[in-house]
Length: 148
Image (cartoon, rainbow, N blue to C red; front, side, top):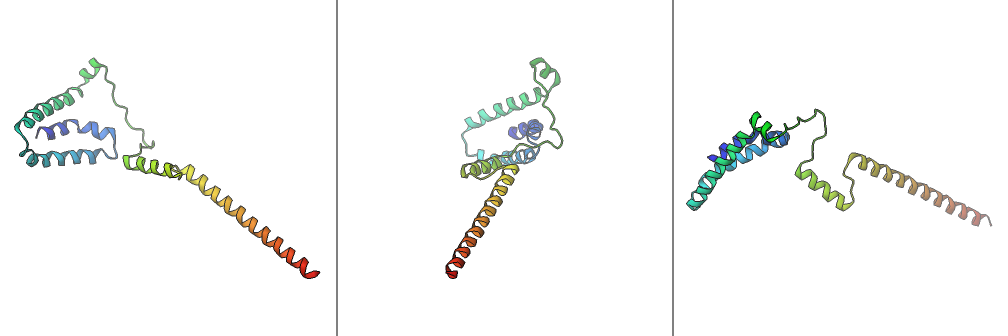
């Protein structure tokens, strides 16, 4: 249960670090804390002797480092608040998808997608133009042979 107390003491940090996925991370750690209780019953007692003091130390550290006087004494700056309307950092899955697209040579940004789309349209126009001119040349050549 000390793990759950540690999570609750540091949840503001998780929420601030990523407003989009922060609540999901906090709930996942809460669930892990509850699931670990029956799992820990099969572990040696030494693990309990390690985890409890470690979690108590982590919880104390989280609480202590949120104190304004402690932050000032150690020169810890306040975390800047997110700017409303500013672009959010991509999540892990989105970053991974972009890396795969880059490896395949596919565009990853809206500007790159628009550029690729415009290039494809221009290529199609050029192909259509060449096809029309080739057909016209063939028809012209056929007409001159018939006249002879």
